[in-house]
Image (tube, rainbow, N blue to C red; front, top):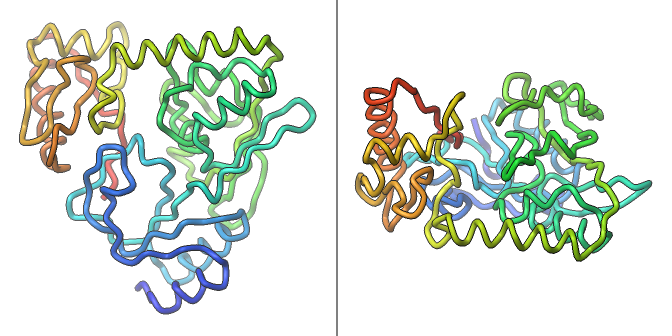
Length: 301
């Protein structure tokens, strides 16, 4: 059972903010979701370790949230504590040719840091609205690149409370997958191995990818990015479009008319609207093509 008085006291001791009954709609890119019991914004590795130890000791459920860009939060909220990895846990450093970023660092900031130091290879991530930790967790990628291509290692808080470094080959990275999905553990920082390149070349690729996103994706609406994983042998957006589902809506949720791979929040959408529309899309696509689409965002409930 959560003792808010004790949690608030611990957070004060650790120097981090603690918000009770915080709406998750404020912390997810879909802008939907009810309240969590408490939202704690962490500021260091030791803060994370102390907070997790406290929550485990009191049998309080918790989950880690970065930029909330690949999350659909339930309308009923989350009956536990959200550990928020944000601006206070986002330091980026360069040492020995390796770029290391705390898990809360935004991909945009990491890309700009790499550009500043003439390091190429991460340009594909420019414009992905996620955090470094979240990107590794789901092996995020775009335009032929993915985290698997650039990650060197990760610092992880294991379930037994130990902190260890896991090398790339042990991260079990594959399409939108990592070891953390089955084995748990909290990603504290990510170290990247990038290549020296000319800044104007790096900047050119970053601008090209961003322009493609702005032209083809409905960035003006809240969403969680690509709503469905790419099925083997085809593309979710193509299947959805040929099935006549572009523009289909349930409540405030709509299959984008600009890019059918995106379900968007046109205003006032709920988690229930989004999931109901996703089910319509899955059912219609399977009936018409035989492909069963799988949701890419994680449901937080």
